[in-house]
Image 1 (tube, rainbow, N blue to C red):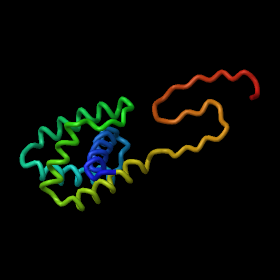
Image 2: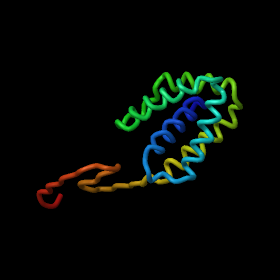
Image 3: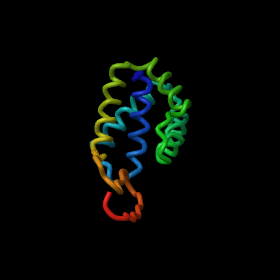
Image 4: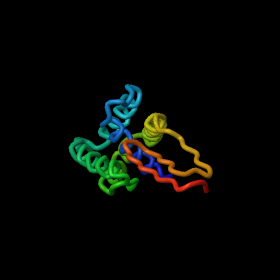
Length: 129
């Protein structure tokens, strides 16, 4: 995956995770470090970054994994000004920590499997398969 995409994805994941009270201090600290590093590379354009992240969180919370162009453009600008290796390491840490709390599900020959949080499910099974 292209470094810009990795960094933007980690920013989006960290911003979305930060909206939940259950996020650990470790995830918040990792995200804050990445956010500060990207913001430093934007030379006073932090409002643009905040706006792009807010838009991205709305898209991510709606179930979409599409990265918005505004966030990608800002990360490209920041990457040009900051050390790409540092940004990538911070992004990788956020991605690992933000995903650590997500369940891993393996379903083989199952009925009525539900994956995700906050879902509602009603099953009606009509006998054995």
